[in-house]
Image 1 (cartoon, one colour):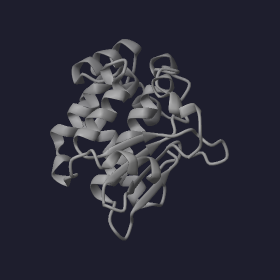
Image 2 (tube, one colour):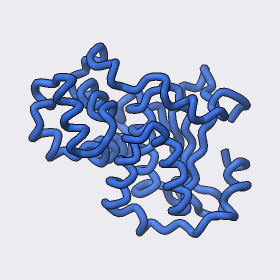
Image 3 (cartoon, rainbow, N blue to C red):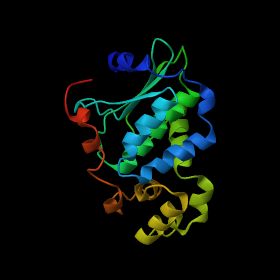
Image 4 (spheres, rainbow, N blue to C red):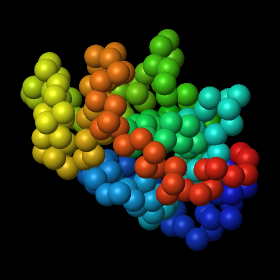
Length: 205
């Protein structure tokens, strides 16, 4: 990951933590509405001085994402697309961005994550999960919507439209909150992310 990033970072502006302000999170989440939203997200982050790289998933590792600092202190996010779904892409991306914003430092310069496991006893992972969920779908909107208590496909799409985000993000939140992963699977955008990144299916990390 660091080797690939080294060939890219000399062309980028210097990263500033000040760029990770609320408007940035909202603008980034709204890119999810585009069919090529993940590619747009990659370009968006590069314009802020961050690097997002997609790597092939290694079956024995079960890694979804990683956040680390280059030797020059530049944030690098790696993702494997182990789950080829729209909701998984955006949650993993925002989880790693939460690490970049709040946790990466010279003393803690790397996080490697499996995001089908909840943060559990690790407070940093739990915090990253919470930031990712609330940044993608703000808590106030979630609680005010009927989707939180009585989810329907039409309600999910209505809330997504209101927030200008992909319905998969809302459907994924419904599954997480209800622990019913058999519901609304047709809204998760399966099979639509990995095809955007040919590098996800070749080579090795």
